[in-house]
Image 1 (cartoon, helix red, strand yellow):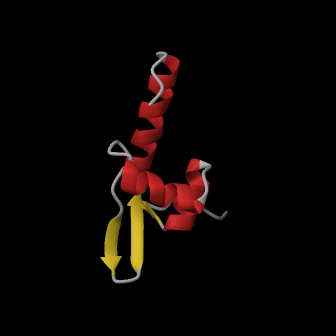
Image 2 (image 1 turned 120 degrees about the horizontal axis):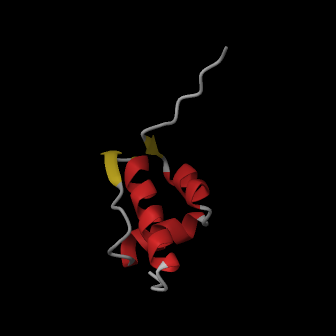
Length: 71
């Protein structure tokens, strides 16, 4: 039996796919949306997002939409 582990962090392309947005949109949100989670630099060419923070962002957006306040 194979166990699939969910990663704690996502690279940019994986984070964009997880959110259902484009790669350039991910970076635009990171720069322009103060409510969007900040990326973490692990090295010069390695940037990740914490999956838990992306989940919280999605939850916040879903709550805002359900409440009639578009975020």
